[in-house]
View (cartoon, rainbow, N blue to C red):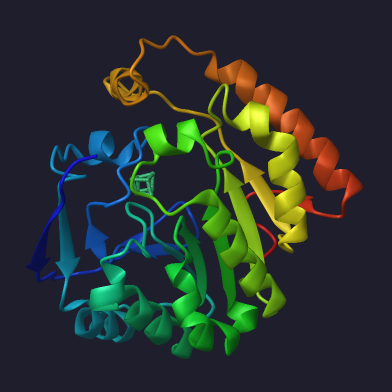
Length: 262
Ligand code: SF4
């Protein structure tokens, strides 16, 4: 686990177009969760991704300015966040995600949140007053144990994510689980129990994604696991997808892409 430094920065823009929904806002640059399989450091060519997290402290006025200036259509879907976890623990100090979802929802936008952190429960007051415009998803690759500790060393426990999903579902919010990237030996071993827990947590939608290896990622994963790996990601993905298809069709859950129901 790497030591993380923090820095306050000022942004000049904050809304980006996104293939996940219509737009995205990333309140932070970098992510404290340090998942070994994270592709973002490779995508952004940011070697400090896990060691330095930057908080965009002027996000709120910049967002307000852009929402007015860009005349974004009411009902547009904002995904939080495409390049970081919007509820990593630094959010407990800066409240930038809270301010963002509050501004977006009160401007008539729809918001899809995807996180690994139960900190999202803190904002239940805002989320529950805009239920029709909100979906909250949690990323879960498998259950707690050695893979979680090696591959997601700084992320909250899977059990805490599932408890948070239940609280949100019980509050009437639309919740989804994002099972991905499917990890051989972890996701395929735990999938039956995981799906049962998700159903009990009131999750309505499940999506499954495959690993997309980028140059350097395999070596990073091997280092996190402490062993050389030559894993068959595609076969594990096919096995998991088959189980998820069977389970969701038997249990009136949807196997879909998040927010495709909108
Ligand atoms: S939570 Fe997401 S963005 Fe953060 S390190 Fe893990 S995979 Fe990357």
